[in-house]
Image (cartoon, rainbow, N blue to C red; front, side, top):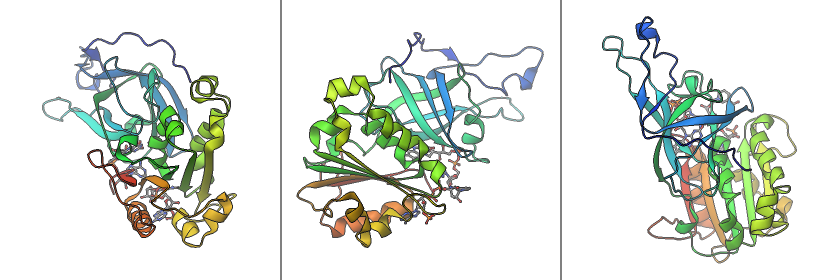
Length: 297
Ligand SMILES: Cc1cc2nc3c(=O)[nH]c(=O)nc-3n(C[C@H](O)[C@H](O)[C@H](O)COP(=O)(O)OP(=O)(O)OC[C@H]3O[C@@H](n4cnc5c(N)ncnc54)[C@H](O)[C@@H]3O)c2cc1C
Ligand SMILES: NC(=O)c1ccc[n+]([C@@H]2O[C@H](COP(=O)([O-])OP(=O)(O)OC[C@H]3O[C@@H](n4cnc5c(N)ncnc54)[C@H](OP(=O)(O)O)[C@@H]3O)[C@@H](O)[C@H]2O)c1
């Protein structure tokens, strides 16, 4: 869990860009930009998913669950040769105390950013705007006994942060994480992360030995055979999810929830939580649950 030493980054650092030299092969220009961070690790999970770690700006403070804008330089303008940063919102998947920053990413083959970002290697640089924001933070929830993290696809990313955040276990007796994906391979990042908590000496020492026993993990797939098939929404409606987990359905007295998935999922689950009596909260008005889109449809 501990990051290697990070080299001090100056305000103005070169950003890797494979197209930068193409415009003028004889006199390659080195681009100089603020907000550059260096890639320290990359892992490909499937042909559509990868995770990577970058150095953390010394001044960056964020709350576990928040997102930032990251990206690369865009292609040079065909006439002027000028390049602009190509940025997208990304949940920080690492917890607020980590020395590095981790991200969990989709690879959209014709996506402006991820068609390139998927090729980053250790030592490359990315742009990271150090302005964290977001609703999936503990501050936006009233005190409760159980917290539910509901994710689809890359919506797992903010929970990868919150599952490694000591406050999650200080605030709640039980932490239930559901993750619905199309295919079994898409669950791997989350499954390995949760498994790794058992042997994480630092977290077991800081939070308390066996803290991970508070976690109930409920992974499901919808389009490929796995141990549990079905959308979490359907499994909750039928009562199957609660029976499998051995827990009571949600109620506003004890339960708090965070939702991060595709738009249809977020809307459907939001309606279900409202039916259980939970109300939507915000940073400025903490209540029972909060929602954030995993991506823009
Ligand atoms: C608040 C917020 C947080 C986000 N956090 C993450 C994150 O942690 N990890 C991440 O991979 N993406 C995240 N995204 C999505 C991200 O901003 C980009 O859309 C994504 O990196 C693809 O960029 P692109 O330029 O390649 O394609 P885009 O032009 O941005 O997207 C092209 C299409 O690909 C699909 N798509 C985009 N992102 C995803 C995704 N994550 N999962 C499935 N389909 C997708 C959509 O249909 C979209 O219309 C987040 C978005 C928001 C709004
Ligand atoms: N995942 C892939 O293998 C794959 C491959 C190529 C292209 N794509 C494209 O990539 C984009 C995103 O795909 P994705 O799989 O990452 O994300 P996604 O389409 O958001 O699906 C992720 C998971 O959420 C479930 N889901 C969707 N709507 C739901 C709802 N209202 N309630 C409960 N669960 C819901 C899906 O179940 P259902 O399966 O029942 O919808 C799936 O298991 C799509 O445009 C897709 O066409 C995906």
